[in-house]
Length: 348
Image (cartoon, helix red, strand yellow):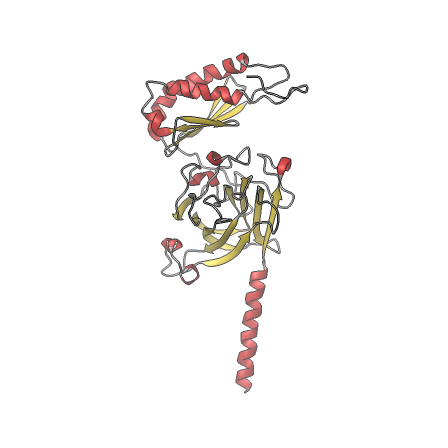
């Protein structure tokens, strides 16, 4: 009987330790609605996205499920570039319509003392909230293989469940800008991990469009990191007053044409377009981006100051309308007039 009581006490102790371990994880979520939401992603309770976190140079990939080709590639979640409005699929990552979500694997390259894991999303409807389970692994256990991130028995194959996140409001509409921060409740380290795994679920299944528009994933170790240069990503100065951010990382074969033809044309014509479309009291954007995407359909499109180009179409039209298509989109970048002096409509 004595041994039975001791065993029971020991078991109770284990349960208490387990419960305390789980209680150490603090999940904070915040939401901006309407005019409170902006491209700066400022929250009251959650830090704003960072471009210098420990995850900025991590290897990030989709290990289960498939991304929607109408969104950005998975690298969008670590580059610090954020959507400028709540319905910008071309600036967000999301899983394919009609699917049950998927999994995102972040490989930090080495064991890292993780202090915070922050995720951000933005959409005016059901794609706004976040629903996922966060797993982690140090990666050094005997027999561990990161490929198990695709499997069904995660907690039996070296993965530890860190947090379950669900920011869906209990009542009212789902739309808005969401920020989530997972941390240690005492402000310490969550754990030393190399791998983080996000097991993402849709927010609703009433229709095909319940997969969240994710904007960014940040992993903080309390240090400031310098993003490593990435092939196919660069910034071009225009007359010393404006900047053009170029991203052709998905279409590296366009580099020769971009260097020889596109850059000179953009540098020459953007100031001309700004001057031609000048309006009293209006200042045109001083920074815009041009991104070539391999899986994009159509020709090109502009949302705010972001120009997106269908890489395959451009590849076959370099000697034709390719340059003109980009100049056309630069006009849309400049045409961002706001009502001035009570004027209700933008000039045509």
